[in-house]
Length: 242
Image (tube, rainbow, N blue to C red; front, side, top):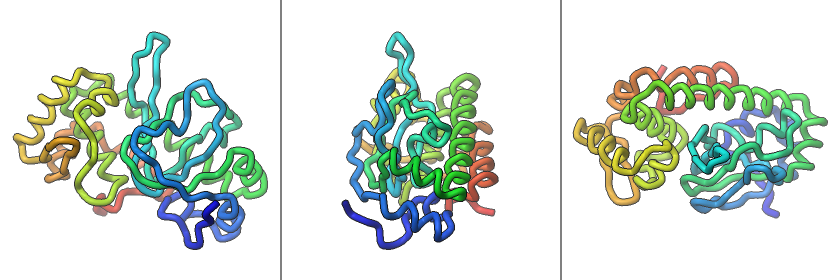
């Protein structure tokens, strides 16, 4: 086990008071998150809580018929397994690493004990669970009310918020899976955004060129979730100006 000697880049861990940080730091293990690694599998027990430091994890909801859609994302803003803080230890969705990175993780039994011992850790975990529920609600709104180009713009902005740099290591095929649309539609929407000078698309990556333009193209689907993350957790992307 590798113990962290300094505060994590993860917002939830950084926001903890010293007593709560000292309590949880002893159980944290630093690991790499390779792309496409499953962190949770629907129907199984949650084994680890991951505090993402870099990269993106996708929360994927699947129907009984096997249809899939991304219902939320987690980056350095929060943690996987918020249901554990609510008393549920079973994976309701599947969580997969979308963009490779790193995390600090804690075994669920130890995390539960830390929640019992630390009111401040428990409060932050519950607030994140609330914020994430708001994110999934707005993802449902985007999926139901937005056209593909708007949904794509929102999604790219959310990834951009949680990553360093302007290049997102994602493929057209993976975008199609995450947004539950056909790949040709993704290619058309990307070409539209690229034609407006908002992004630059190349094999296996998308570069954000004009964030303000993407915000405009999102058609109001981006922003409400981000306001709630700031209100509840004190977190917002460094890319968002006052």
